[in-house]
Image (cartoon, rainbow, N blue to C red):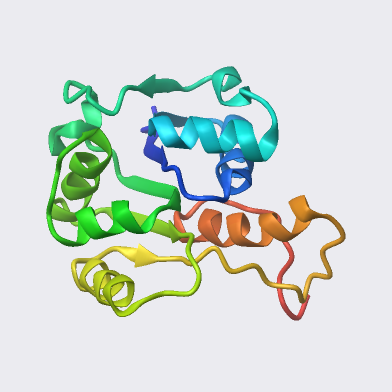
Length: 186
């Protein structure tokens, strides 16, 4: 029997809920994947403001409170191999970069880094200040991947969702899942 991929998705209160929605939509269509989700309180507020709904309640995944340190991915022994923070606020990035594990989201990030597994932070801020850049450097040096929420346009997207999907497609590629997306030169 093939082992399931175990993925943690964290959603912070940074603007860009559409990115989280599109990734969760994609993951809900996949087989043989176990997904745990952590959303900050602000993430829910921003989702409702930006997307006009509470559809985050409709996904077939296990959602964990940000204070639930009994969640399986709070320990490396649970063998969650990937974590994506989408969108990732600069406050969250700063806590991760400086080893501050004050909630489940930052604890899970710390676990993924210490176990040398894959951590992808979809940074959502503009412009960056030097503190942001230095925190991105620290996370990168610790083994994380910074994937700014910077869309591409060579696929000629037609809608806001198409534009956001260019970022999510990169995330899907980074976490190693099969993705039938636009490829340059094809």
